[in-house]
Image (cartoon, rainbow, N blue to C red; front, side):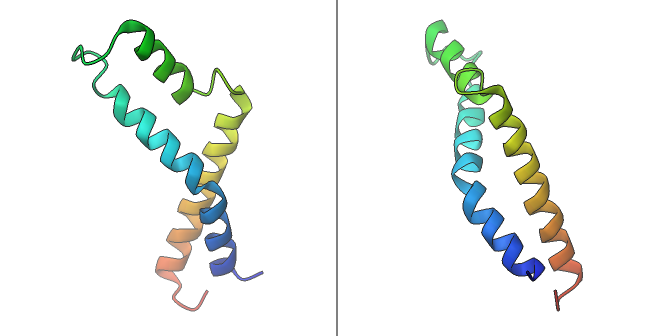
Amino acid sequence: MKIRTFHRTCAIIFSPLFLFAASSGGLLLFRKAGLYEKEIKDLVISLHTWEILAPYVGMVLAVGLLTVTLTGIILFFNKRA
């Protein structure tokens, strides 16, 4: 499998998880501004750290992000890949 196809496939598979992590992390930027209650803050923190769903999903997300990033760097420097 060519690296470009592998990069594209990984990006499509992991993009929903990336969007979820980015949006929940963005909400956490306002946790000390008092925009939402403590219960909502605790829920967003547990969702962002994957405590509610499964802790190992966060590890899968981390591996996916590293994979997409590294293959993107390879594609940037090697135009024929």
